[in-house]
Length: 494
Figure (cartoon, rainbow, N blue to C red):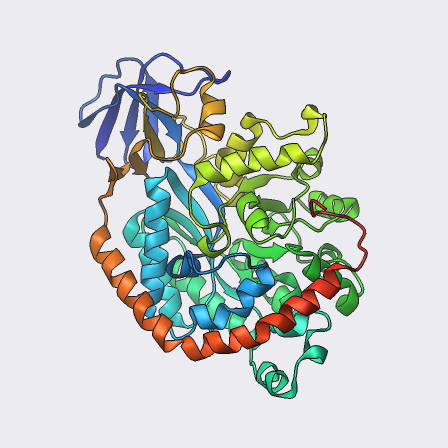
């Protein structure tokens, strides 16, 4: 079995200081030993002048967003999704591959070695499109839990009051939208599990994704719960991301989104709920009682105006929290250092002069490492640097402008580092990024092909953008009216 040794590298100590230089012995895809002057043959990697940290873990992202980065400004989630057909329709499997690949490349280049991926396809998922996204992650070399996303209720049906305010021609367009039947969605997801689960040397894990709880029927939710139990795989969904979703659940189902999942027996320790903003204490207790985990996405929660998630209360309830970037349409990039900074900063505006309730740098760093490992179902395998764990390792330049002078390194990683100092990235012991270049794929070729795809799709989908522009004032009006209703919690800054 192949060995490699990273020599004279420094690790982050318990108190945030740097420990004395050590060697890291990698055997196969595992860390075999950490200590001074390890006597071992194999590839010798000079780690002097570098800091080693565990690869960061992105608990929630969307591959389909990467081709549309930068398109929207001052959009709510509902605005963004109103433009979804225009942005995501007519993609070939090659387009889906490219969108996934450029996101995976961006993550590696900013020190992220593993991600929980939930991707959407318009109008429906196909086996060829699913294969393309899986292959992109496998080729780039990142570790990923990948969940093709499905819904069988239209967003336009789920927004309270929207259909009634539409003019006849737009109402006919909305009514003509057809979603995938629940049975077909479950079959397609199961086939993906059989084809891809455990591939790429175990780096690719397949999960299920009822994309948004309020846009999934009982049949679809329970079908995915059965898949989870049959194959021992995860469920990843959006939960109570906006006030509109939360109010809609009470109007349509007579209960909160969390209570609905509880009644349907969907919640459990393999379930990850993203955002989790518009939840109350009873909802949080349900999540805690079932061992359900949360993926926190502070940057997108801010950019699309969804609100500030009650992460302090969620942590205090004993719930595992991972940290995510969300998709690049909602939060601009895949940079986990930026996600850490946002998570720490936004927590501080919720509790005036109560810094004991603010999220600390240590808590946030743990969300991006050990918390993320638990969310991905890889607890004890990634997220920390110790013998027996996967060799997912990031080397940072110690002479960084952002990290010097070296005081408390953990604080600097959370509040100051931008990802620019990432010099080497190992996934499962393989060097996949070195001095700014990803080694597994031809980056420039992928970006050139991605630009050509974008240019073609923007022209091809212009009629769909026109429909979205016509629908936009009605979507905004219905959402504004809904948001003015009273609710049991308040998560907006006003």
